[in-house]
Picture 1 (cartoon, helix red, strand yellow):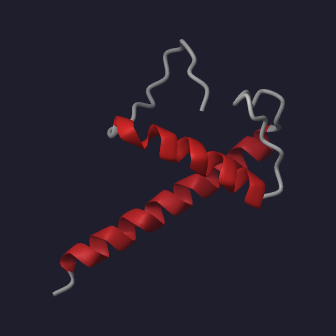
Picture 2 (tube, rainbow, N blue to C red):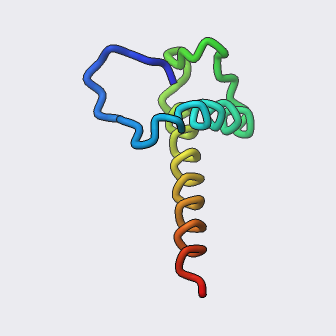
Picture 3 (cartoon, rainbow, N blue to C red):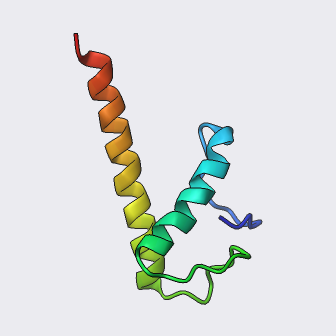
Length: 75
C-alpha cells in the first residue's frame, strides 16, 4: 500500500501488520488474476479491480478474526 501524504483515516492498530497486509494485497491480486504493479502504484487499475482486491482482503481478515474469536471461547 503506497504511503501518500493525504488525509486518510486508515490507521493500522498494529503497525507491525503493515508488511503482512502488503503481502496479502499482492497475493489476493494474483489469485484474482489482476496484475498489481510491483511499485505499489494502483492508479492504473480500474475501480472494480481495486475494489475486488480490497473486498477480498476484508473478507479474509474478518474470517481470520472470527476463527480467532471462536478459538478463544471454546472450552
